[in-house]
Image 1 (tube, rainbow, N blue to C red):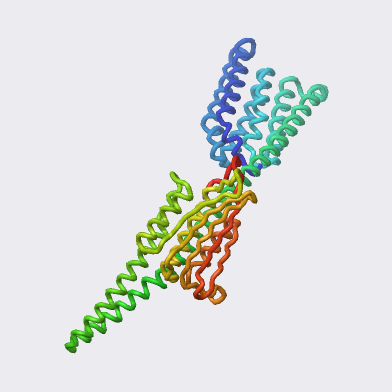
Image 2 (image 1 turned 30 degrees about the vertical axis):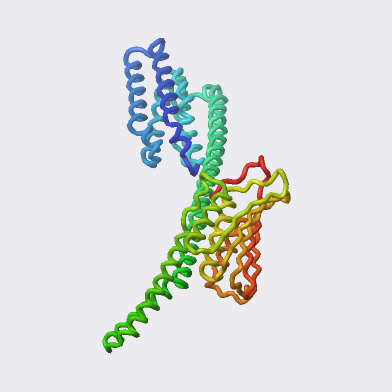
Length: 406
């Protein structure tokens, strides 16, 4: 047997079985067994077996150390043979001796070897007690053979079941470890992607602004050193303008990564709060509306609501940074086709989607998030014609459980 966890988990049961069987044999001997010196020897042998089990055998069930396991089984075979020689009814010990052989066996052949050792000790005891004759041997051979056969069949069968159980348990443990590793890998990949996105945003906005401030500060210091106060003040004014722009960029980043707040509100309410905050910060008018295609509507999972709200945040961040728009319209719609959609339209400067650079607008991250949710992203824009961003996600009909957010 390659694994022994079953025996370790059931050690208390083996304790009960062993001591109960030892008690049965003790009662038999005291009730009508050997007397005088033979009884003393029998009691001493029972004590030896009990002490060896308590001090050597039982700990070996847990530790699985080879020497204690072999030592206990040798003592078990010798004591059982000696007790059967003194009192034939001591053969009841075989009901615990044969199972214990397999308890302490790591391999099937090990159990087979000790099974034959015990039956050989038993045969020697019977022959010594009844006489060394072929008649005694032939008379006892059938039940010796049956005892060996039952022990081997039972032991190999149980060993196979235990091996299969341990293999399944190990498979389950492996699957759980693999699932945990995959979850950790996905989480790590998400963290890396989000960090890269934040890094790109900072590089495209704040870092460039700070570079300009450093350059203008150096120029202003040089002008002050030359006494050109007017030009120095002009440089300071430019520094102030860049600093204000950077402050706006920082606020935009904070807005984009702020908590979504969907736990105690609807998606429409969250969009309305987002629009109100954006309008107060930028002066750009933002309207939010919602419509459904029929009376049933649709029920979005929390994860899909997060995707739609993030889409609106990203779109408004793009408007703040690039569009120079006067108004923005956000429309949330659900329909009988089992999908929900959000559209963000602005009347800004627009752009050419086919020549969009990797670092601009954050559309690559938006598209990845939408596609991970099983949806589609559509971008319609042209220079001077504003921009339309549309996301379409699957939704469940009302009354169907939505998947939990992750």
